[in-house]
Image (cartoon, rainbow, N blue to C red):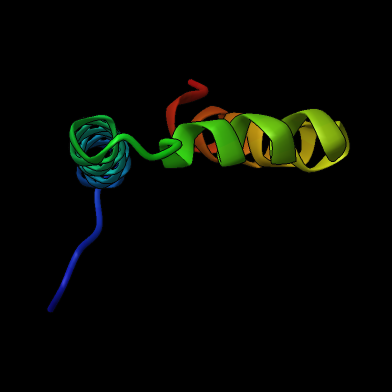
Length: 71
């Protein structure tokens, strides 16, 4: 039977985060090479336009980590 441990969930979250950061860096490198605006400018403007969404995402991640690792 499949058992999901807190370490596995944390590892999955970390892997997804690092993968997203890698893709953003790759996209920015390609965009700067072509002389275009990088996608990080769009992400930055969206986060500034909708700060509540950023807050909700941070709270959900915090609740998930707190739920898994609170003794």
